[in-house]
Length: 117
Image 1 (spheres, rainbow, N blue to C red):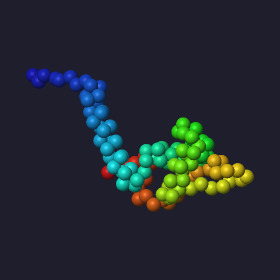
Image 2 (tube, helix red, strand yellow):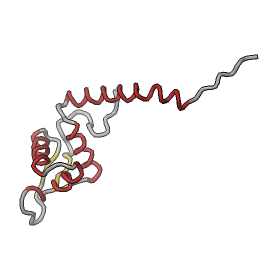
Image 3 (tube, one colour):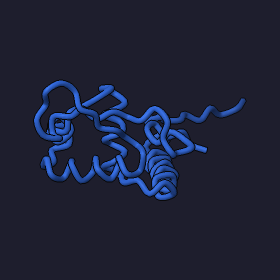
Image 4 (tube, rainbow, N blue to C red):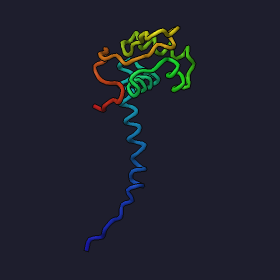
């Protein structure tokens, strides 16, 4: 008669979980470094993907950053061709301009929700 071995799935998952997370992080960082994009920029892209558009103040509040920090991030992302900022209505100053994801950017793969190779 064969002896049945009991496996504790929770313990097995707990053993491999850190290894899986580390591999995912390494793969994602290699994708980010190829496109020279920072983790903060990825978070902004994810926010814009989720909301459709955001004012600079909304981005600053969501990321708990200053307006000047968000301006620098968005300006760099505009230079990279990742996002665009447009005037809408009678908004004064660039902080009220909504930011959008560009429909067609220079990147060859989606950075938001990166798929693993």
